[in-house]
Length: 353
Length: 260
Image (tube, rainbow over all chains, first blue to last red; front, side, top):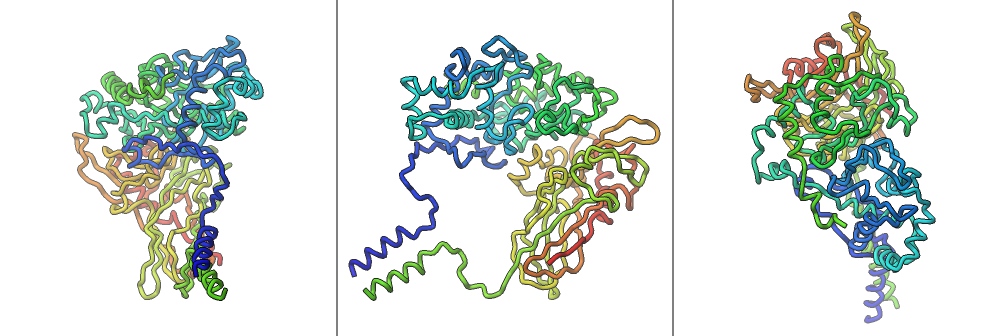
């Protein structure tokens, strides 16, 4: 009977519903994202790819890579050079300058709350299908880091530190570009901003000023701002739809945006809606950084809309340039927008070099 | 050895991955509901979006850029009055072709049913909080100052009329009707969702029900829609919402093919 019991236990172990074969695969220390409660209560969970689970070691490695110029061809430029924490992980320059001194043609995108980009399309024109894929491009872009992946991987492999750190994160000292992208993506998913004045208001900790409160009404009012159809509303703390729109900037397009990717002329002049979080730190604005101030942005929507065939139907009174907000409404709208900025995000020690 | 063999067999019997407990001799089935879209009979496909090609009953020529809408409470009522309703919902995005087929999460006995659904959310459903809808399309919910709840439909595009060749944007958004007083405070909320009864349908074990939306009907009956007047800022327009609901409930949806 003892043998029978032993056999039973053995069977119980072997005949399992668990698909994980437990074949000795390395597992780093699991890490749970610190998700603001308001996010948890009101929107879907963040997107974490099954093949790139968050880990303490992965995030630490990704952070080191993010701030290290080792990925660039001449060891002079890191991700953070164009995605600076103090600029909301964007660039104060209209166009970032690559290692050869050449400028790009789009403004560096702020990095925040990227794990909630449900449609998984990254860059102003959506050409990357995941955060991991997005990371591949700047390293080899000739006007950015201008490196090759074999060279970047060789630099990491030949360093004294990195093989050990990759071993800690992924269980191997043999580095490849996929692991580099996975580590940086893990770090980028930790860049969560959820503690602005408006977040504090949502949590019942503070009151909005009268100007901020009226600005919110302007933002939500269909006859005035009607910003919410693209930029979200108080129940959607992302403050972007992560969708692509032509917001009436130009009659003709030097940069066709989304249609460069889809090949569909109906997508001419469409660019991804940026989040309104952290605008206090992320100037200049628009995909090409054409506006230096928030006042210019508000004036654009109020008086400066320009018709083109693909202009979004949500743009109002295009023939008159916009809805012509009063000066008071403009000031209040700006006050509300600035209430979405989160100093604790850009100063978070976990996000600094 | 016999004992061991017995234990082995018992173990195999107990340690099973199959969730089916074998206590359901009656075959219950799920039903697929397939949404198709047309303009007075002409099928609307992705390539038809952003093309000014449709003429509404009032005479404006228009395009569709976006057509997204909410369906809830697909309900099956049998001859004895027994009601089957999963109480779930779906957000159909016509241009993207997403959620064109909806399978309510309920299994029902095969048979003949009266089938109906709700366009939008009735007040009971509209007052809940839905993480997936808050996350959809930048927030499918309606801001509280516009009455709260959720959008029922976002139909958008451009139109031209006889007086001018210029294109004008329109936003035909349907929500619960809200009336605001002079101070901007909500004075009246009216549930403008409506039930669509598709009639009798025989449900087998692989039934697919086609629901057809004739988009032209949103502009037609009983209210001939004048887009030159009612093209924008319709969400806070109480009367417009009542009219849109009236048109929606009169001929927009109909039963199409039922395949078994």
